[in-house]
Length: 259
Length: 264
Picture 1: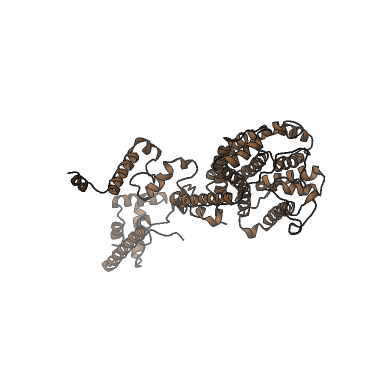
Picture 2 (picture 1 turned 135 degrees about the horizontal axis):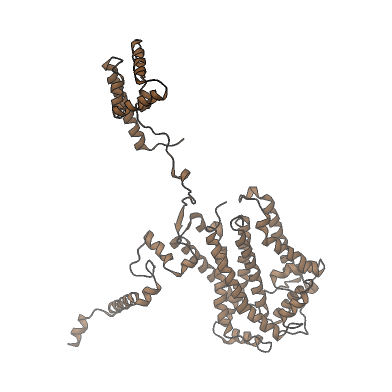
């Protein structure tokens, strides 16, 4: 439903009221023969133009002005009250208007509006304050942690003394864990290679346009399994592998883990 | 006479205060100050909180390279982003700053590296603290980058139009891991040597060109002083350089794709 602007509606109502008043006055005036005259006046179209258009229409219909006049007279002579004389349709609408509001076309339907107004906030202070506090927090955390916990510095590197166990940095311990299960070619290259490739092209594989969790159960499950797979391997490699990279429980054999 | 003049002078704190105000006015009125802190800056005199000045703070500062003047309201919700991307970037800056400090005291040769770290920890003011921060910050950065990736995935934020930025993000994750791994060797202690030995042995299993890749990275068939130099250059120069390029693309794409992704 198109909403009509207030001022246009008001104007239309006024015009309608005026037309009603004119009609009432005309009805009070009485006779049928006089009817076309005031209506023509109400239509605000100059009488000579009305005459001309009437003549043209009659000519187009094949008759002559004289015949037309006779016809009109005959109709009038019939004694019927002529509510709608032949001239009426040329000028006026239902309420006696010469024009009326068909519809209001909103700008969006004829202009190519590319962006809709969005609810936005200023980056300063809303975003910058949050970022600043986050940065302060992480700096404070790192600083305080560094005051109390020292980074490891073991003895000088020695080719002749292999520590037991030898472990990769923690984020590669999942890979090292896989090495105990598969051929190095599979564990060190194929599985991580496929994993990383799949991760990279994920947006081109996942064509589901929805971002709602309930619409993407499969994608979320797959990713969660993938993440958990690595997390579990890293945890096992970090805490549950002792001398000879054999399985141990950290609460029995102690920790074999350096950051 | 002398007592008289002293009585007429205002007390010392007041005079100092007036002097400080005067110096402050001079500094804030100087050309250098007004060139650095552009109109709208909160460090300018007479900053008032108005929408126009809020816009100027971003528009007239270097931050305009990173942030637009306005962002969608939900984009500033901490519960949505958990600040993970921003924290990763901030940790990178923290690593750069602490890393520059460490570079002053470190020589990447097998004969000197371990001694330099040892002397840094024992004889350099704040040496131990800064090294600790560099190390823990690095581990933290691996974690935040990883969590950032998980967050983006679970929000479906890699979907159109942000597919390409996700690819850049995965490259950034790999670069972060490589940066951390190359830094692992530099202290040249038992942990460094053998962790990197295990790590690079895995690399050797790559089909076709595995051994060649390993040879190029190690600068020989086994880890030695050449490896140390190579990994040092990779760690302090090449990888950060590449990372910054990809970071720039990453941030640029965030803005070109219409800010961060919408709410679920």
